[in-house]
Amino acid sequence: MGQKHLLPPFTIETAKQKIQMAEDAWNSKNPEKVSLAYSADSEWRNRNQFLNGREEIVAFLAHKWDAELDYKLKKEYWSHTDNRIAVRFIYEYRNLSGKWFRAYGNENWEFDENGLMKKRFASINDLEIREDERFL
Image (cartoon, rainbow, N blue to C red):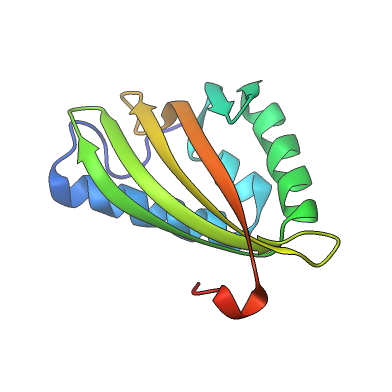
C-alpha cells in the first residue's frame, strides 16, 4: 500500500486532521473504505475483541453497522506524539430491537511510516438512552 496523506511525525494540526478523516470515514459506514486507513497487518483491540489485518477489520465493521443502526460518531483530539494519536469519542446508535445507545470511549492509535494505522486499542462503554436524549 502506498503512502497516505498526513504522515508522522504529527503536529497538533495534522493529528486533528487525521482524527477528522477517521471520523468522516467511520460515519460513511463503508467497511472497505475504512479498512484502507489501516496497515495490512493492523492490530486491533476493540472492547474484548482482538482483530488482525484488514480482512478481519472489514468483517468486524460490516457486522457492527448491520447491528448498529443510525450510527453517528464524533471523535475528539486528546493528545499525540510523533506517530501516535489518542482520541476520545462518542457515538449513538439504535439496535435491532429499536433501543437507543450512546457509547463513550477512548482510542490509542499508532501509525507506520506510510501514515497507515498499525495499532488501534479502543475502550468503549455503552449507555442505554431514550430517543429524546440523543444529541448526535
